[in-house]
Length: 147
Image 1 (cartoon, rainbow, N blue to C red):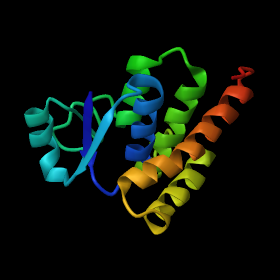
Image 2: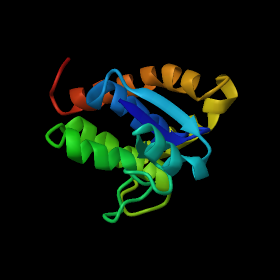
Image 3: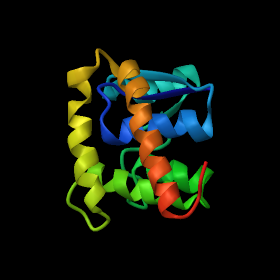
């Protein structure tokens, strides 16, 4: 399946793309386009858009969730580690809000370095996957789960 989002990915878009590939659609084809093109590409390609105007999963939905949170709620509602990671991503993406948690600050800072060490969004996603895998494993261990 095709998925489309805004180019120059940072916190939420990187985390959402990781989530899609890891838990929702391992064979996902990810397209990174300009923000004003996401809705058109979504319609033309039959893709599912995220974190952009007119996307299936917008930057902030009617419930105040970022696309990462919405997809976790929809596809992995019983995974407490992913629910906690959703809080971290929410805080890092939206900044100083009620659901901010201390880990959000670090994730936000790290994401600002993504374009400084990678040539494009595909490389950012490939390299950031280790970060999100490690964070997810740590959160699972915190909740007594392994593997």
